[in-house]
Image (tube, rainbow, N blue to C red; front, side, top):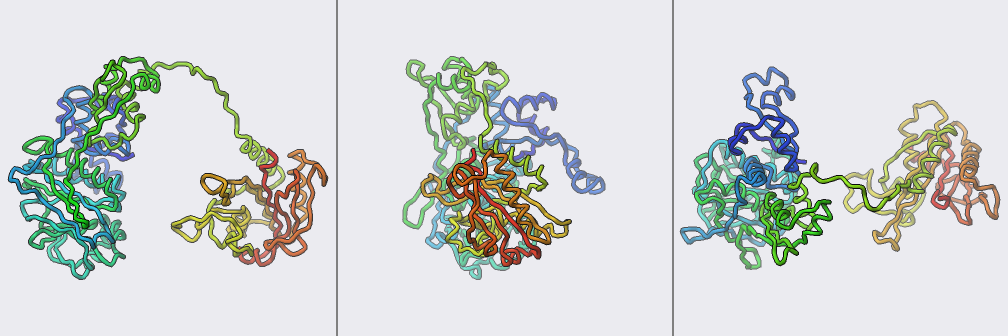
Length: 589
């Protein structure tokens, strides 16, 4: 959950009253939030860097509030105060409006075809006649950073640029150019740099270096110009110094470039709705026109309201309360979802504002009603249907076998479910196409390319990492393997396998064979070709020729046991002989 840090005094001033820490904690809980910590700038610096560094730091009290990850409207002081005030019924839900510019000339942003290769989407808007103060300005910058880290996924999906409109002139052009052709003075720098030099400059910047990878390997870098060729920004890295906003800024041009248009619209809506209250006409946002390479033009921000209908009896049933439709509508209105009863009280019409993109389904509306009602106020009742929980049979068998294998002197290992292709193919002398392995489409490392089809490589790697331990090493693992299965809706299925390994100066085949007998004894399977279990000589590339056997039980082959091939042992960086056993335990459930 994101944590929002707000100045306690500013918060109480905006709320119009003061609270004790306990009272405000209770208010947060009622609204579905959590007061995580009461601290100060001095305390934070003291904890991170020591008391000496904290000397002279502000002792103003800061509230750190945990906010649900999908409530983007609560990521700043303005949204938090607005939400709490509506919740306590001190103010009405504001109505956000998109207006045309008073001058009649709308700001235009044209997107060229070159951007398709890097960041193909953009949206824009204008906050006209906004009045900034120090705390408002700080909150404006902080909200952008919070959005970048949250819905924007560290600027990979959306990057926000805010500019002083009075320092530039439209129409604006959003294009992409080779790095050598882009040159401007970045924010808070004292000279011009080329795009390549900017990337080098920020490689050592603790903040911006995390975003360089988004475009650094692209042949073209995105850039936004005004009609005079002034660079507004090079998204998603840095804005130009020429257009930086300050406390004296009166008109703000906001542009959001993106790889996801839906996310860009949400980000723009949140930013303008939160800070339009400081405009000369509160809660109004000046429209901007964006023209895409196909020639189509769109007006932003959308500030779209939509209506949903929900039945009161469904809400009561899901929450576990008995409330009248009018009371339920009132609860929803307190959560900034303006609602009223329609028809004969059979339906509640809910208006979802542009600040609530988290409302996707009827269950989201019901959840908000439950929060407004108060979870602690919901009467506890005995369920009408009694259900008795049972352990999943396969897991129960697994737990029982684990206990007895440990009692037999073997140590349990827990290895990764993902491994490299070499581990399950080349190192075991098998072609990867014969393994039915499920491949990871975008593996981050060579160690995690496929889902394992056998437990053996994991145990061999565990032994390789523990070669200095006293011999013999006796390990086992009971876990799932994954193989392709076209009959399943996901194209793959799990199998529960048991694998045991004995590593010593001699192969110890008799130890592994004895363990198999013990496992079958525990499973109440007698040694018999007809109704029990038996082993039959076979060949397997992972095992030494003439030292491998298939295990049959319940009329089917359930696995192998034998002495591992010297080449397999060598490929796993081991130097001593090894015996192994691997079976599936699912037929015994």
